[in-house]
Image 1 (cartoon, one colour):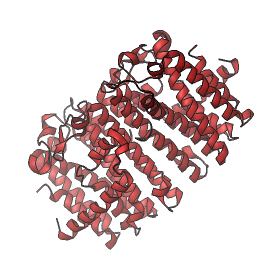
Image 2 (tube, chains in turn orange, yellow):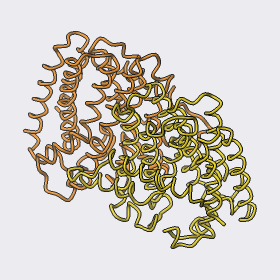
Image 3 (spheres, one colour):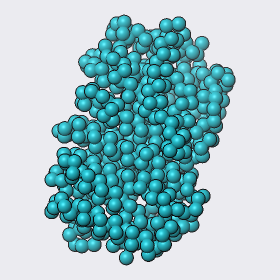
Image 4 (tube, helix red, strand yellow):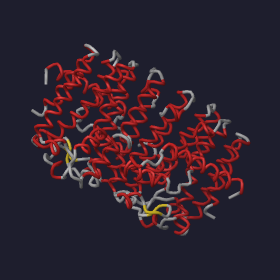
Length: 297
Length: 297
């Protein structure tokens, strides 16, 4: 990672963390449910989706701070999906980012509710007068709709459902594409698109953000699959080789690690070419794209 | 039930069912997740929350059809909460409305996702241009926010969490009030408030809808508790006495059945007095309030 990108990510992550604290503060009267929601929300996430949303707004000439409420909503949605994915009835994971998963600490029932609470709170944020500020109401509505479509049964939830059903099937490239485009790709893409919408991007610029988003969403999943296969547990904070053990549909499983890496690299290069047209404000998105696959070397 | 109310409810239920069909149509390419979502959404619900939302709009002089998207979102939220409540880690129910619960048919993982999908689809509806139509954007935003706050950790999800934790505690009136105001009361109240907001109600009328909603929300829960205790399984489509067996916090458990019925009756009378001030357009809400407790006689 370049020094520039490292500083940029650290600074943005700090901004996002502070905003999340402000939107979902600790409160003794909030009970166990709030504790469970905050436990996973502040369990050391990289804040990739919020950072992409802010960078998307910035890349089209907008003020990233005005997209912060949407960035926080995206992280709440991402966190809820991890809590539910980790449940015994789904991926059955005991650790994530080096700490016990939500249901290991709070029990399965409370973990389901903590996920529900985070998803709902994301929607509260996306429709809250104080959060939306003085943005044109139509922009806020459109951004919320894009995010929610990406999170629903035609997007992330649909991808997770397909993933669940595919555990008993033979790995197959079309199926892997289908699952990943929805399970991780849709929300990553929506993060960029929503940022662009909130900043008032025109059609061409919005389309660049979406096309960039599709490519890095897929590249990100390929990198994750490669890391699960080849990374070490200490760095990842979770068991490695878990996907293979569960017969998960992954790119390395279908294409082999070498070709999977090549595909990821090609997607990154395409993404960079698409976004570079937006000029200097899109520089962070260029660096971010390069960084995705570099983690796997 | 009066003939008038019976006809009114049947007609409104039909309108809501048709709108739900239109917003979440069957689609072979939608896969198992869509089937699971539709299985519970069309499992014979009374559509109480949507009907309250439409009646709320009507009571303040609005056109109920313009609140239909919000009414459908409310039913999706209610259905998702039932699916998650029925999970083995929560209430562990095998039957609801006479048919097997979602996880008995589709498995626990898919049931979690079906609930997630319905909650997300509700938010898609609340922010969808075609659904919102030509309503003032600010009204639509405010209604969506009221609904989502009521559904979240300060409302329904928080009530469910408290209910989960309370199973091991001694029944206590303050705790029963706390749980019910959130678990069922909040969304019922929000149904009326959102209907009023969408119809452009002034402050006084909105306040009447909210005060009416608080009372019938609580009365509705008391009636449900009484039916669970005294109703017969065939009429209810689920096992009776289940709450008592689980040591659930209910009004009959704390106050005894006679005083619980008296409390419910008092709430209904207060609700009717509050809403009657809105005149003839509020007549369906009067009849509905009376009907709630009459089910338990």
